[in-house]
Amino acid sequence: MAGYKEPAFQDRVAAAAKAREAALARLKAKPPIDPAVVAERIEKERAREVAAAERAAQRAAERAERAAEAELAKAKALAAIVPPPTEAERKAARDAKYAARKARKSS
Image (tube, rainbow, N blue to C red; front, side, top):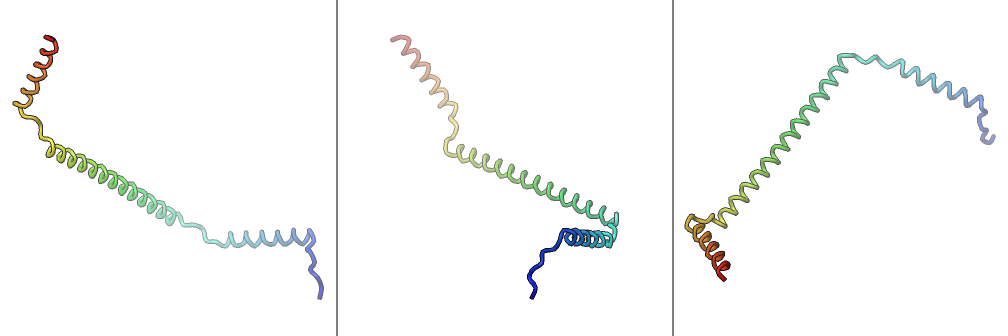
């Protein structure tokens, strides 16, 4: 049995040229791309991009709406906990403030 014989430089160059020719033949054998098919692919991709942008905008609007609802609920909860002072309570607080200031000045 003969041992492994390393291919010579010329053999490697010939094998590379043969591989190049085979690849070129495969490339030439491919049917040309139909412009209508390319246009249809581009149109579909644009439609996908538009739909994705619309979904993103809708999600952003829903997030903003949920945030606004949360703020409104928070404000309502706070208003339910601490009712605003009545006119009489505001007058009493103002009078107390003035009386305290007058007391400080007279001391």
